[in-house]
Length: 498
Image (cartoon, rainbow, N blue to C red; front, side, top):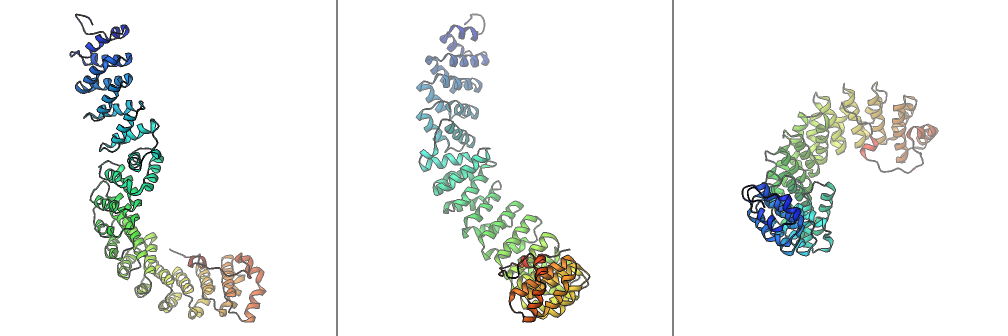
């Protein structure tokens, strides 16, 4: 080292002057000199430099300490490795991160043990880095006990690698109760994304403490909506009341997810709150409430659903509201009949369809009355529903509609007659086989249904068989084939809407 100037690190390193470099490591006038000295000592690899490098790591400025960490990793004596492990507890996050990085190249048991301890810590970025370091060192989670596997895989939930997160979720699910503590730690971490992944996995574990942690997380704005979604998968009824309270949240995503989970839990206690959510300004929250009420089939929802149908009778909301009312069944019939006399055609159509799905005889006369409605799609919807109900008393009113100028009405009338399966419709339906193609196909399908019902007189059967080839060609079905079970939508594929 020169007498009248700063140490020349390059010259000292070239000469292998370890003592000179150690002295330069203490040169207080220039931090860059100390950095270069620390780096040079590592490149030389002198074990005698370990104590001063440890001192620099513990006492010097962060820039010098970072170089000391890298140099200790190059020297790799037992004392150096122990100092690096101790650096994992430093206050400076950059030093801790550098220590993790350099230790990931040292394959010793004490390093494995240090990383296994680190993945249990509350510093999430270090947990993730330690998990990656363990993998790079060849550590195999399948060879570890359940506890260490749980902490390792929970740390992998923080990675940006979607495939790794997915694998971690699967492995944590297999571990069950052993994974609960690590996941709860993540859930409460306040980190941006990891708590959401933790909530998802906890929901699948369905363990008591997991459910309790998810319920508590409903009060954490960062993870509440993920916790609400996860609670639906637990199947635990303790979540019902907390989720009902969550429907009042200002967080629209929380309201939507809480409604979806209440649908999964299928608890009637949720009905009043879900009915109230039908007025929510957030579309997804309303829709999830509709789905839930459809599944719950509770009569208490009828009036709120009717009110919603009056307000929004178009599009998806109208359709789903009608389905929810139909799911309730008999208790919804009279309120739906009351909608048939309104001036809004789309509202009337939806009410018709819901009544057809319910298949209650109370609706027959009001639906027959609509077969004369001025709006063709109302006539078509009424016809379809009468067919679904299977109302023979509608026969006389349906027959003239086979010749309705509106094709949708004619098709619906034919399909309805096929649903009613009354032999008296055979002559009129046979007459439709010479109509346009759409009506011919509808008539052929109806005749096929009537024929298969097996209630025909010999003359009617013979009349149908006379047109057998045409009917089979139009309906793409063999008259001799066995009748299969059909859903409402199979019979009535031409549900018309405005």
